[in-house]
Image (cartoon, rainbow, N blue to C red):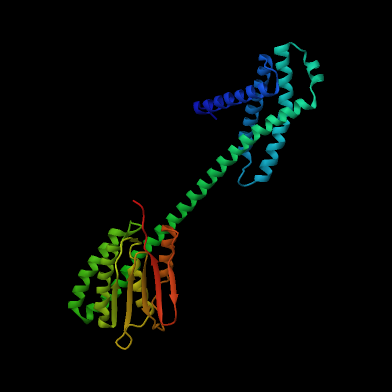
Length: 335
């Protein structure tokens, strides 16, 4: 792998920092002597750069995230082993270079205190290098996990959004097919309104959210289509107003869900109330369940999953046996 200019600058900066550490270490623990300072600086540089290279090598083979204990133990063992060998060789060579003392005599004079000093230096370096490596890999792992999560949710959301259009068209054509034979004037009205409604669906299909105002206009057009079919047997009222965003076709889906699961007749009219406040929208209907339900199974699960993608808010469903109520959050995003 090519050694880049940025890597060179980073390593050069690291060497400079460790040289300063070596200088201060020598001034604190040794006499002010140029030669002793030189030895201390060399020891810090060799231990830091060597240990740094070992950390980079180990990180390529063992992950902090996947095997943290093994990574820690391996790092400590390898770095202590390197420290003992590298410290001994560096001390022998620098003493020979600065003082002219023969290597064999230096070996004889090296005591436990010298190696404890080297280990202390390594502990300081290790805390810095391992802490930095752990933080960077942990941060990278979080980034990868979040990116994967977002891509998965985005793919799932695209699939959910694509389900809305054919589902809506299928039900609209079912309504129209009945009207063509029963009342041609109403069929013409239905076709015009259906054109407006489906234009909205096509225009908003690529959007994750729409304004509540746009969604309500669409909802009222859709309600008009359903009232052509059911007449006074279907009663829809909208109470309140607010500003915010909702997933496209959310309110239509809830009205459609109420119609699919309940009887709508002169003897049993269906009442659907949409109550809006600053934070949420409640859509409720009286319960008069059909024996046979025309349901594709998308409905509420679709809406629940779309909210899971868009925010940490979720829909709430309440059924007391008399009325069925779905509460959807009104989303507000900072611009």
